[in-house]
Image 1: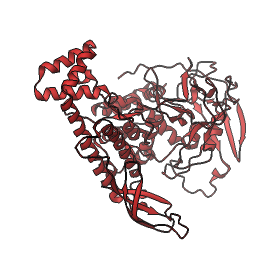
Image 2 (image 1 turned 30 degrees about the vertical axis):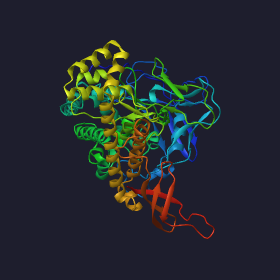
Image 3 (image 1 turned 135 degrees about the horizontal axis):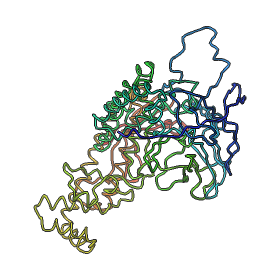
Image 4 (image 1 turned 60 degrees about the vertical axis):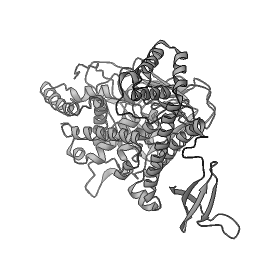
Length: 574
C-alpha cells in the first residue's frame, strides 16, 4: 500500500462576506481575491480556510503562508432555529428515493463558490426535480471552442486528496492510530481481492464525511442536488437480477460484490459516526452510487468528481464537450464542435459499445450505442483467442447487422480446435500475426459453412433466451402499482433486453434471412396492456416485421373513433 502521497499546505487571509440568496442568509468565509476566467459568467470565489487536525489538504488558487488549512462553509436558514427543541435527524440530508433534488440552490451555491458558467449553457430542467434527468444544454448556438464551465480545484472531490485527508494527521499519535485503522479497512478490501476499488473507497469516505457534516459541509448544496433514485445493478431487486442475460448478470454480480465489500470496510473507519455506520444500506450505498457514477479517471489514476461538471450527460457516437485540468488542478470544459441551441452537452462515461455495462454501472440504456458485445462467452478463453481479439469491446454485433472480424476469427479458431484441425488453426494464427489477409480469407471461405452455422445457432439460442427473460419479467408487468413499488427498474431491464434482441435480429436478417432455421422475421404474437385513467384491458395482437399491430380486445375506440387507450405496454410475446 502506497502511503507516500504528500500535498503542500497553504493558507489564505480570512474575511466575511454576507450574501443574500432568495430568502436565505448565506454566510461564507471567503478568499479576498476573485478568479475570473475569460469567457465565463463572472462569479465571486468564496472559499474559507480554518485550522483543523483532520484538515482537507489542498492547494489554493492564491496561497500565502504555510499553515494548516481546510475548507469550511455554513448556511444559516431562518427556519433552522428549532425553537421547539425537537430531535434533529443526525443525517440532515434526505436520502429517500423520492426526495426533492435542490438543483436551484446548488447552482446558486456553485456561483458563490467560484464556479463559472459559459453564457450559452444552462441546466435543464432548472427547477427542483425528483427522478427526472437534469443535464446541461446549450441555450444558444455555441461555436467550436466556446467556454462552458470552470470549476476551481478547491471544489473538486478527489481520491488522492481523500487519501491524504484520511490517512494522515498533524498529531503524531493521532496519525499512528488513524493509519493503523485505515490499514485494517484497506486490508479487508485487499483480502476480498478488490484492490482496484481502493480509490473509490476513499472517494466514498469523503462523501460520507461531508454527509455527516450536514449543512456545515462545503458541499451540502451539491450533495442535496444529486439523484437519490438509481436504476443500476446495485439498486436492482433480486427478481430484477433473474431477468438479466448472462453478461449483464455477471457485471451486476461484480458491482454488488464491490458495494458489499466497501460497505463492510466502512465499519473499520474510525472517524465516521455511528449514525453513518448504523445505516450502511441507506447511506453508504448512496455514497457508492455517487462515487461510481459521477467520478472521472485522470491520466494519473486519480478519481475526481467535478461539482456541476458531473451534470453532463453521456454521449456515444460523438460528444459536445472536451475538458482539461490546468497545472493547479482547476477544471475547464469547452465545446468540441459547433453546437446548435437546444442540444444536450455530453461527455463519454465509458465504452459506448457496451450498453450492458452502461446500464449495470450508470443505470441507463443508451439506444445510440453503435454496437453491442456478441455475448459469445466460452468456458475457456486462451491467449491465442485474446490475440485474435476476444474481448467485450471487440467481439461486436453492430446495429447495422454487421459482425466484427474478431467474431468470425474467434468462432473459426474455436471450431478448428473442436475438430482437431491443428494445421488450419495454426495457419489462422500465423496469418493473423503476419497480417496475411489473403490466407485468412481463404481459411474463412473454406470453413464458412461450419462457422456461419455456429454463429446462427448462437444467435437463435440467445434470442430464445432473451424471449424467456422478457416473458419472465412480464409475469408482473400487468400489475403497474406492484412493479412501481417493488421492481421499479424492471421496465428498463425489459427495454434493454429488447434492444439487444433487435441487434441480434439485425445480424440474423443480414446474414441468414433465407435460412431454413427458425424464422424470426415472421409475425410475432404479443399481449398488450392498454390503459387510460379509468381502466386497463388486455389486447391480443399480431406484430409484423415492420412493427405494425393487428389487435383484438383491449379498450377499443370511443364513439368518435378515437382510441380509448392512453398508454400501451407489451406484457408478453410468443
